[in-house]
Length: 457
Image 1: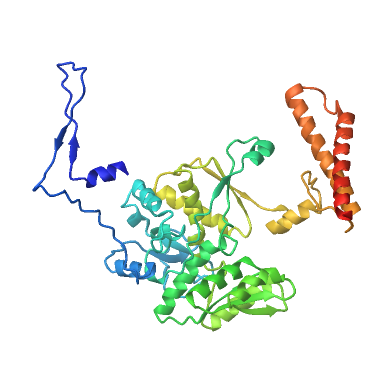
Image 2 (image 1 turned 180 degrees about the vertical axis):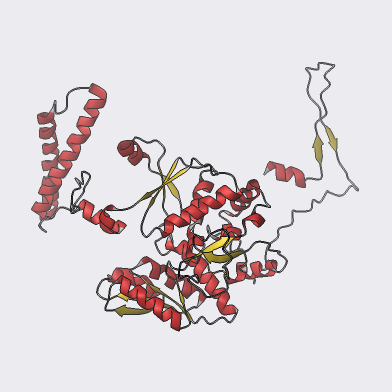
């Protein structure tokens, strides 16, 4: 702040060069260079603030500025895992989901064009956009626009400023369970629809918005879903005014999972089949009708999801963690993380060959959430489930609840006192167990008595 004020001042202070031949212990003097044209008070010109007009939105401002911007970056579809000699490719503006051989497609960027700018340029550019409201760069996804969809006009982007999710220090868990001082958790679920799928859906729906403006045959966007995908799709489609269609298995989805797509105005089809059956139907329907496929077969979503990997490096001041552990799922997010890290390796030089990523798959192929339920219910065969924390079944009356709570609080108090004794007095465990129990039982009974007196009065 002081530096900026100094630069805007009409007075320029210049410190004289020290005279090394003489020693002067007296006060130091500075010359003041000033330009004053009259006896009138000096009027300083305030710094110009480039603010948009009051009646102009941030999207309109981006549209106005985009006319003067030049984009030299590009991306295209290529067959997934294609040989270097493969020449098959498609424009991102084509409606295509499979290669000629029937395999998946991948989005390939012009790495050579990106490499014309060094790593410091990209890191500084991405850092300069964090936390801003400039459209669309305030988004954690679109702040990396050149690495995501470089050719899309900012005016076509559909964004809720997703991404930029916090990374919190899991201090107690890391020290107590893993013996680690530096365990961090990237919480991608902190998003407006509650899952990381917002990162990918902003890219897919933005491209659909572009295609519709180009008068391509796209009336709506469809997906098969059991929750998160339909929530993200319906939210972004609602924002852009694009119809969304959700295929879901009947009687297998809770109303809580349906709240978002229904509230967002999606057209929901409840089908007498399982998820795989819904997936098969949506693929057949999108091949015949002008409905754009939004499931993970569409590789555009990975372009948004990969920005979470770049964001991790950014939040660590572009330092690479020793390990990155990612839940497996259907491995789409794993490949997205690979793409993000690989682009950093190619364009910024912050990734080394020794840096490692671990993929964690849940036991017995269960969904991640279901595996946690089964673990805490001790329902996974051949697993001890030592840290299981199942709910306690209690009768719905005051006495039963208080008895259970007494037992629980007593066990916690004993654990705490035993830990303190071990740390400070170094006495054997349970050394004063009887006294502790007696003292704590008096406290509990006193509490219960007060509660009962209040209920009676």
